[in-house]
Image 1: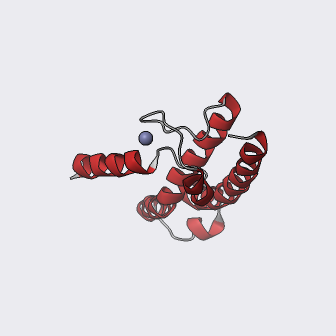
Image 2: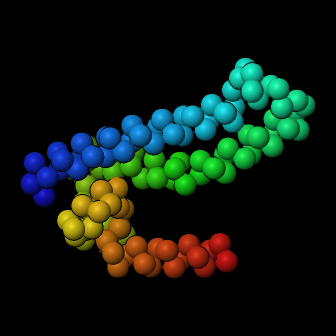
Length: 121
Ligand SMILES: [Zn+2]
């Protein structure tokens, strides 16, 4: 992949990372920071635990996405960006345009998703 292409993907990934960090950071704050008055006002420990659980669930998808974005940025650094993690073939640039943090080519993505479905039942 051309350097300029990688640079533009990197820029988009950094923006996405920034956006996700803010979102995840916000939900983590609500989940963990018991100094927050609104949380304290909810009352006893049980309520606080419930609130923490609630925000953890809420942020789960973002957390996963954030992990993929960070992974993609690492791959840009080590030069493996744009390569499928499963079959080591290049990922179509059209796919990367839509999902710059994609870890697999379209074929492997299907297989991986199928495997995850099987694993979680
Ligand atoms: Zn693949």
